[in-house]
Structures are given as C-alpha cells and as structure tokens.
Image (tube, rainbow, N blue to C red; front, side, top):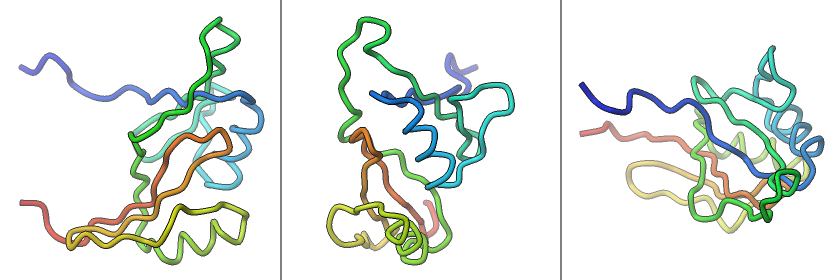
Length: 121
C-alpha cells in the first residue's frame, strides 16, 4: 500500500484573500466549497487561499509549479479569461502531447490552462 493516497489540497498564498476569492470564484468560475469561504474546487482538488503574513510568514507567490487547470478547449478558455482581464504570458504552447497557456493570479501565483490531447502511455 502506498504511503500517500491522495492530494488533499493545494495552498494558494495571497496578500488579499478577498481579492483572490473573487478571482478564483468569479473570474475562473471554480466551485466554492460550501463549508469554507476561501476554498474552491477544481475537479477533485481543493484550492485553499491563505494569507501567510497573517501567520507571520513572508508572502511569496508560488512560482514554477503551475497548477494545470484542465479545460476542453485552451483557445476558447483563454479568450474568455482575456475578456475578463486575465493577462497571459506569451503564446499558447503546443508540446505535441498537450496545449497550455500560462498566466498568473492577482498575487503572481503561476497557473495554466491545460488540455492533453494525446493518449498517455
């Protein structure tokens, strides 16, 4: 049996949790957790917004660990988010296996829209 059985949540550091809550809920359209004001669901993964500085920890955005947010159509999702003011980092990438478009949340945390079109194997 594996020691680790699943991913419980991903911590999203913020300097303004209310702003982050609007971004993840309204801009990205993630489902808000019915039991927590600062938690959202991307499929089976919970994203928990927290403010490190309120706990005495210096704020630093999560960099180079992009959360790959699955979408069926990267170009359409990108256009929808751009219309809402989200700025993407460069062109949409096609790796020959997947398409991805990189962006950040208002706190500078790295995110991406992602769609794998080639079978895993």
